[in-house]
Length: 219
Image 1 (cartoon, rainbow, N blue to C red):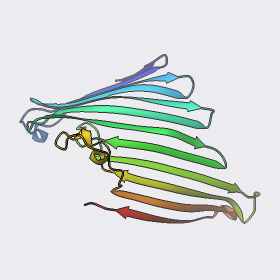
Image 2: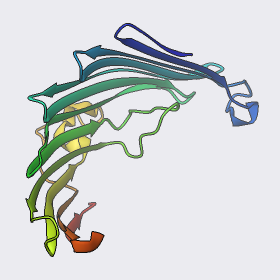
Image 3: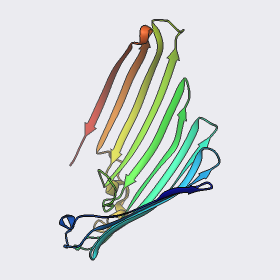
Image 4: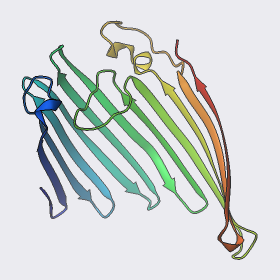
């Protein structure tokens, strides 16, 4: 079911999976609900709920998000979601959160800064999260220069990015009850520094070059 009433849009899906995909021999059921409301002409606020119920086992996720466009070329957004899971081995819950503090899309200059955290026990059986127990930041700047139409180089742009990653339990040790209270560790487990250049050339040709330095450490 999908539709929109006034400034509020809604989508709902109910699905039944094959019993061969069940760990209990039952028919797994999925519920997916999305509600989003427009704020002005470009900003939005929304809610989401998903679950997968397989007999007595379940996974439920509920969350909210907001996206605010300001001064026409800037936006900020935030999202938070919690999961509750009982897979027969015990019940647990986790948290996912993320925010884009700012993003600027200008003709000659743009930037982007976001940070995302996924608790070790966050789980979504009706969605996709490729990695847990991680906090990741992304910071990028873009600079563009423009030549005259028909010039040898009509446009040149460079993207410079920094992308550090931490283990969630290192930054938030209290999130792991087996470790007890502790001081956060700011040592990254991975990271990258990248720079890329793109050129729009006369005659519709394009050229580019990119370089990156990656760091990976797992004790």
